[in-house]
Amino acid sequence: MHTKTIAELATGLRAGDFSSEDLTRALLDRIERLDLQLNAFISVTAEAALEQARAADRRRAAGEGGALIGVPIAHKDIFCTLGIRTSCGSRILDNFIAPYDATVVEKCRAAGLVMLGKTNMDEFAMGSSTETSYYGPTRNPWDSNAVPGGSSGGSAAAVAARLAPGATGTDTGGSIRQPASLCGITGLKPTYGRVSRWGMIAYASSLDQGGAFARTAEDVALLLQVMAGFDPRDSTSADQSVPDYSTTLNDPLTGLKIGLPKEYFGAGLDARVAAVIEESLAEYRRLGAELVEISLPNAGLAVPSYYVIAPAECSSNLARFDGVRYGYRCDHPRDLLDLYTRSRGEGFGAEVKRRIMIGTYALSAGYYDAYYLKAQQIRRLITQDFRDALSQVDVIMGPTSPTVAFNLGEKVDDPVTMYLSDIYTIAVNLAGLPGMSIPVGFVDGRPVGLQSIGPYFAEAKLLNVAHRYQQVTDWHRQLPPVG
Amino acid sequence: MSLGSAEVAKIAHLARLAISEADIPSYARNLSSILELVAQMNAVDTTGVEPLAHPLEMAQRLRPDAVSESDQRERFQAIAPSVEAGLYLVPKVIE
Image (cartoon, rainbow over all chains, first blue to last red; front, side, top):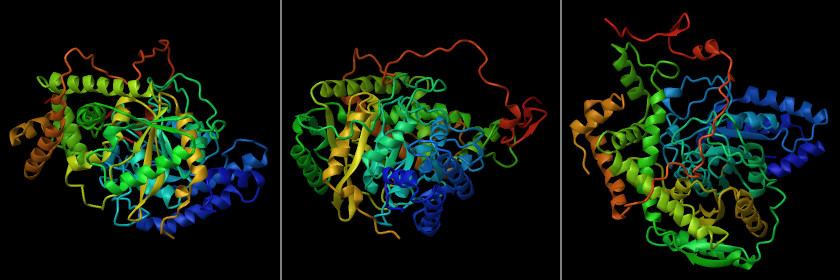
């Protein structure tokens, strides 16, 4: 049962081939057996999951027709879940029992999706390897010496290892696309504002966006259908109707214009990854697409400007963790300042502290223009590059990550090297565009992902482009060597 | 751009982060290398470019000035480290 896709599980549940309770129990057993090694979950909510599964079975029996009723998924531990610990991978929230559900969680529950548990992540989504988690690193199901990517590495590993058929994630600089690529699964970061941020713990609010992981584009379409939509409680939520993502999946790709940015195929890209990407592009040519070279002249400035904008926003967002209203409080504070500084100093890990300090520095008196203003000007140049490119082509394609999954411990002590693993994904967040990663091959037994980037709110097009590829290839059906 | 120990200590204070004396050199090193990365921004002339704060350049949505949330103080304070009579307790501020 665990190898079935969400679409297949939905069909089986509808036909009565198995109950949601049976399915949920099978996946919980699998998690219990395999997650000790993978560490994809921070919390497994077995009892609540079985309760939700039985409720889903009752809804089906009563004749309710929701497509996904009874399908189990996992949520990244950044989404608030009522009555359940929401840690964001941090010691400072280790004791935080969320008093409300995030909009995404609420929507999934209303659609009848069963929550198996909360997945591991880099602390406050700051990382590209899931190694900064307070709960220890997650391992890549394809190779236990390799990282799963990050920050949503727990969700990606859980889906790749078939512990869950789908999972939620968030993407601020690549945190859905990069782990999807490194774990050999399908992941979509929607347009900024497409999925509500309400109840999603904030890292960098002008970049954060929720999205989904699954094995296939068809499954991601089903999950996005549930998650997307306007939310009055999120002040930057897009007030735009949500199309039916499943109806256009099979549209032919004849005449599709794919832009290949020359900056994404230059120095820094592993030659063997480049060869795999070339092969996948040849497949697209056979599907009727036309490939054209384009340029994103300011692509190289994306990482530098991101590491001003994101830390600036994070230093402001994370000011709320003060040891007073919720979360970790240090022992025996001498005075109020000691309470603040020690609760935060002991509660946050090193990478989070580094980013808070960079942000604090960039926003401090005398430095604002040189850093924050400059970064925002570059953000406009990068956004303009994409607008120009997307006026000539339908989608942009290239590698999701310059290398396959690196080894645990390889980059964790060198922040700048770690940051450069997101060179192809970060610009997409700065521009607010939708981006997707699909598996297209392997190098040394580790997966390679192809990134596609589309115009604002063109999620349906990206899903269509990914689905057609998955109809003629089977990279997304490969099974990692776990259990 | 290179940061020294005194600057790191000052930034940590501004950010309300207790950093142990022993860890300051490694923070100084890492923060300096991040600022070096960031300095690559200076390669491009941005004179006259209007800063972009929000990708979709949407206007801030406003809502009617009406009560939309009910009082849930007890629920929210149930997860606080220390409360009494509806108040959050912290060490004495005024001597």
